[in-house]
Amino acid sequence: MNPYDVNKVREDFPILKRKIYGKNLVYLDNAATTQKPQSVIDTVVKYYSESNSNIHRGVHYLSQEATVVFEEARENIQQYVNAKEKKEIIITKGTTDSINLMANSFGKKNVNEGDEVIISALEHHSNLVPWQQLCKEKKATLKIVPVNDQGEFLFDEYVKLLNSKTKLVTVSHVSNALGSINPIKEIIEKAHEFNIPVMIDGAQGISHCSVDVQQLDCDFYAFSGHKFYAPMGVGILYGKEKYLEEMPPYQMGGEMVDQVSFEKTSFNELPFKFEAGTPNVEAVLGLNAALEYIKNIGMENIARHENKLLNYATQELKKIDGIRFIGEAVNRAGVISFLIGDIHPFDAGTIIDHFGIAVRTGHHCAQPILDHFNIPGTVRASFAMYNTIEEIDLLTTTVKQVKTMFE
Image 1: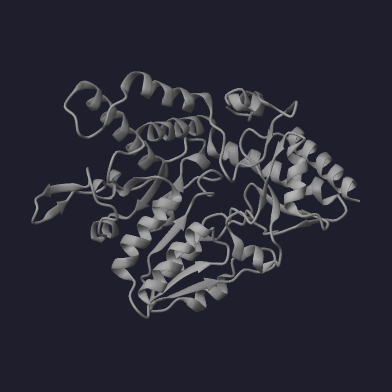
Image 2: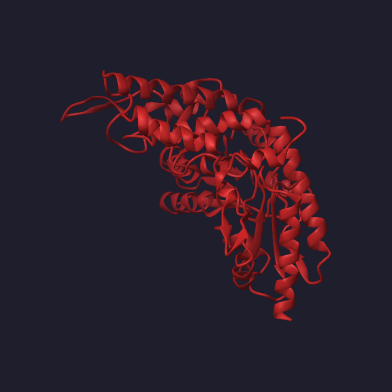
């Protein structure tokens, strides 16, 4: 699909035909969750209509069929992120689940009293609280890489924090609150000079740019399906085999065991030792369908379109008196966070919603970075492959009306 035809893309997303308060839906809350193309919806329906069965456990036809397509999906995910081995792809419930797995498995095994874990000031609560609680339990120290007033990761300050006590660096690829793109390749390279493993929270990164885990040389990369045009309740933790082999299981139960007796239990091989219980099979198949849809369009085409929207929205909103952008990093992806004069973001968002425009308001589960700017929250507009210039114009017009109403 080249040149990019956004109107053709929009035809694939049935929810975009909805009307909200009698107006055409303008969906600009994509950093929270993306909408789903018909091919993903059809895949989920087909699974429940034709193949519903528990996987990995049955000898009957449906179970065998479901297992084959499930493992084919894992292989496609492996190829999409260019993992070296299929067993390096762990199926989880989402990014939050993946990070909790890391904190409770890698963290509890490797972090001890006096050790340090490094995160950045930009992190979503999901990549802050698990490490905060681990450090508290282990009597370790959580170190924070500061940001500047543009919302950019301060690399020189990061380098100062690295030392022999550092057991893990874990940072976001893209900030969900500000859209700042972190220099993850350089972050990884510098940490590896100290033999420190690095985890990337890719919840926002995976939907805005191509990810090659071998080229990045990251040790772990986590992302969620629902921010990637796939169903909710599924995510991926990629990890290098050498680390995953050493890590103990995080959850116990079916599938993740090898042999069980009342005296002892041995655990399954990778990736299954981290996949206790029945997985969200239909969501994994939906994630696979989303990957195919994205590959068909081309991530480069999607990124180019989203950057066009971002630049245009920044340019047009800037023309409105009293607009204050929160986070103006040189390298950003698909997110604008802003305030309209002294209007509380919740009030602004509520009025914007009545024009049929879905934006997010509040602290975006990233309270510390908003504390840095001394504000309670922002209005956040976040873009996806199906958004249009015309929708940006509608947002701009609506923001002007909000401003006028409060004046």
